[in-house]
Length: 300
Image 1 (cartoon, rainbow, N blue to C red):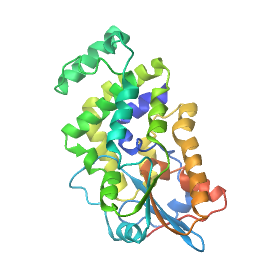
Image 2: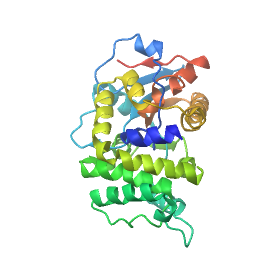
Image 3: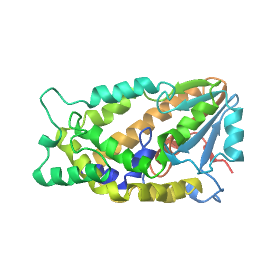
Image 4: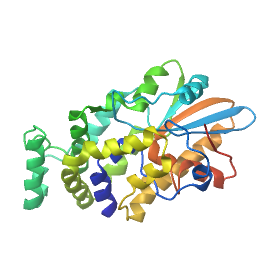
């Protein structure tokens, strides 16, 4: 599927997707018309007794990227509650869920599922990454693709442990926590794909390995200066599969919009941190909230 190929070729896009998503290149006129502040994009909506901040994150960063500016600090420190895509505190459960869902049935072998040409390219990519060709033989194609998306990033100094979501979770240890999705729901987005599509995803990920770190750094450069429109455009180069686009982005954003509407019924200040792609372009969380009659403003 073209979208799977594009996600894999973007490589760094996964760092803005899971926990995170992709976004449309179409600009939101209400955002584009305002002057763009320095620093990552932050939005706000509020009623009489509730304030909700929306902050787009990158899930893997070089450790030297400075992003926690005065705007973000003021919003975060004023918030009683931190909401992320999944519960970031329970990393053991995340690892167990990924590993358990990602294992092939007994007797199956990942490389045996590939065409001879794809297998040759895959084995060379594993060797280039310093891994034995059979290191991922027991896992499903989607899980192998996830690993091959992250490994070259980590080898170039881009670490999920330095990601924004983890940093906020550590800084907000005393805050109330909530999540928009369960770990199982995020895993199912890939685990439930047909095997043929998973293999397409894996093959495209293999092809993207040499440029993975470079592509993510290009996305980070746009994110860190708050260029939400440019970020959306960069992430969406070549996305052509409307069904999967609907599944990975629009439907999830709609669910999160419903969650935000319900949360506005309770008083307090909430800081929501989700993949930056969910907060840019057509179908974004802000756009869906505006269609429901809410005012969402960029924080300058």
